[in-house]
Length: 212
Image 1 (cartoon, rainbow, N blue to C red):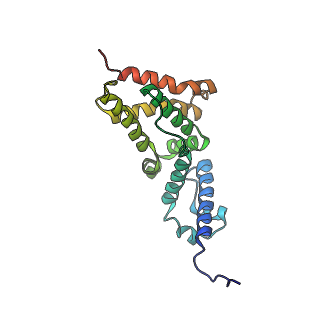
Image 2: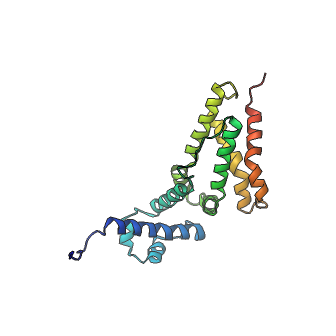
Image 3: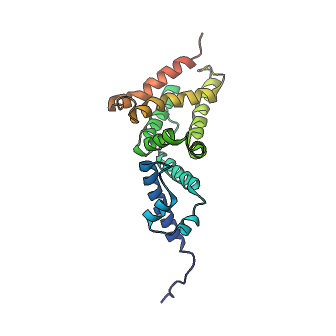
C-alpha cells in the first residue's frame, strides 16, 4: 500500500493539468472580455486557485497571454502528416500553402485573437510584442520565401527581395478574409473561400513571372 503524499509540489501530471486549466480559463476570458478587462484574480477565481498558485506558473498577465497565444498557434498548425510543401509547380505549391494558411486564419480562435490585437494593441503595447514573438507569421514568411527562392533559382520567377514578396503573399492570403470575418464587410462565402487561394496565387505570380 502506497503511503499518502505529503504537502509539496503536485505530481507532474497534476501540475500540467492545472496549467492547462489556467490556460483554458485565460483563453476564454481574454477572447471574450479582452486583455485589459481580464485580471489575474478573475483567472484564478475561474480555476478555483489562489493567486500564489497562479504566480508559481506565470510571472504576470503578459506571460499568461504569451502562453495562451503560443498554445492557440500550436493548435492551428496542420498535423505532422500534412505536407506543407506539395506540388510539382509554383502554382500548386503556393496554392496548397495558401489554403492551409487561410484555413488556420479563419478559425474562430484565430479571428478572435486578431480582434483582440486590433482592439487593444494601442492601449497595451505589450500585446503587439507578444503576438510578434509567439505568432507564426515569421515562420510562415520564411517558408514561403524558401519556395520563392527555389523558383527564382530555377529561372521561373523574377525576385529581388523574397522576404518582402513572401510577406506580401501572406497579406494577400489573410488580410481581406480576416477583415471580413471581423465584420468589416460580408463574411467570405464557402465558394469564395474555396477559390481564394487560386486567385491570390494567380495574381501574385503574375507580378513575379520572368518577362521575356
